[in-house]
Length: 368
Ligand SMILES: [Zn+2]
Image (cartoon, helix red, strand yellow):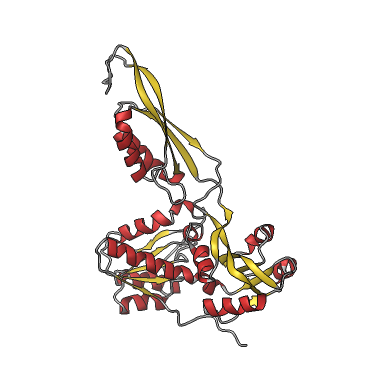
């Protein structure tokens, strides 16, 4: 299996189009045509990560944080980044990153954190602005099934966990083919009236070219009529942070200790909020302070995230229990989710490729 097939699998789940505009997700270094031998999963890229990949014969590294974020003006092998690139290329290693696309997708970074903390009924804390368009096209009834299938394969008709979602309405279309036309139904030089189905399907905007290609190559007409509308729907597929419930109400201090233990964090900072017992929990893996007002608005009893500043603790600490478990530890659960999905993918594709998780030597330490 080629690296690019692994990338496609990841992007079906976490499309690049949902990532922040200024983010740099996808291939960072290497050759996406190489065959996968072994895969190393990591949150960050360092020289030690590359050495670990070489040592364990992994030729593909998938990281959460991108290696290349700011544009490089030079590749200086005396700098750490330069050495990483040199080491990777010399050893035939490809580096790929799934960052904010993995943050904003369903079952992504924040959902993985919420599950690790035992939350139930998990939903996005905040839905992303609509990323969808609607396709409307008009097709003779006997061609609807095939077109629906081809459009579905190209990514149209997905609503939550449902696929092939469409709406179909009977009607009639008219056309008059001029001298140089070759109509699939009827004759040129004559006003034709044909029974057609109005077929409607939604799709993500980054799939526009794939959808148009599927439509134009599978619609029986020489000149298919179609409309594409931008939508303002609530986005059920993508969003920010997550919210869920503990099985039962527990005391805040017990939850804080549970967070520390469950994430393996070396320290957890927190404020008490305004409730002794808590159940509804907001979370955001990585730096999630921007979502605190939303968590308060949603009546969350506590919010688990990282990189919460001193003044943020002071500003909101009376309204909600804020729990900062560290950037690394709140994002780590996504590595297990990636491992599980990739192993399943390799099994279904009958490909033998080992997937290993990088354990950083140089973690930030605390003195108690
Ligand atoms: Zn992060």
